[in-house]
Length: 440
Image: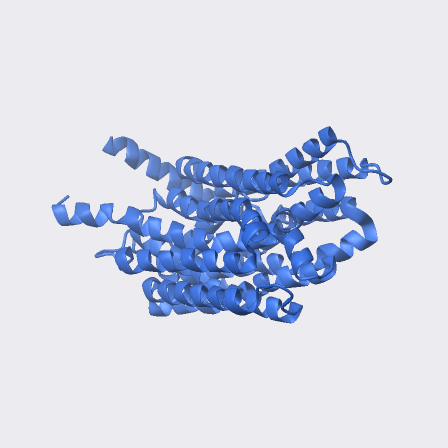
């Protein structure tokens, strides 16, 4: 390999760093703003139902914009889309710092806050598909599981930092500081995009396997859009419903621990940070494991089964909380521990699932496929915060966690391994391992 090729190959890690930074900067808002839910409720003088609607606007914005951003990425290129989205997101956050933050006796209306979060979601929806397409273009097939999982790890890592820092920042400096800090982070990611993100001199594995090997009778990958692939749509459906228990934890664990156990801001922040940190580790581990074994759908079904089991246990434990007085400190610690485990299980599959989507579509259409997956995910981010307050008023917290377990169970058939798919993938993975041994 010549010097130019080596330099080109080494540059892929800088491209991955851009993807990580871009996803982490938006995830800090996505995970950190819901972590301030108790303070939003107090500072903006709104109830739990209005809080759910406001938080749901962030997910709705992503749902509406994700697929258009993905289609634009495949047509326009990842660099221009990512740079445009990050700059627009930073400007939206600056506008929220100026007009959507309570200052003294002035409290912005709930509709203004909801509109700001909707705009934040509309612009932030650009990040996933564009950064994922860049990673697919720069990394070889034998590295994409790990690379995509590292990129996806930025979501819980950035969300964990946001959950750890933003509640304290909101408590001591107000929401103008929260929105301003997030704007600075997005602007810094835009600078990295300008400096490091470019098209590769050659695209690794430019001719992926035909989708016909995964879906009998289908057209080749180059002719078949992901929008017409039933395998892609089944995977997207599984991603969407499996995101619901994750969203339940990220959006309402702070309210749950506060209302049930009277946990303080520090304890709530530590719990959510533990969820995000554990999820980040498991996403990287899952990507590496599936690169070696090739069994992506086995990993996805394992995470699904574990999520169902843990949230069922959480529902049973919550039903034991005394209704007339607060739970004991030890019992609250137990509840928080189960929430951490459930949140990790409900988040550990993301990198593997999005790698599967991008592989099904191929590098040239990865932006569209990843956008489809993220649309499914953020439908959950919109629906769950709006539905949970209703479930809470009707059935209490046990009903909320039972519903989360049932949603995870619905993902099980979506991640089934089709017979033709499993055979071809196992053959492909065996060939990869044989070539690796021969090269060694």
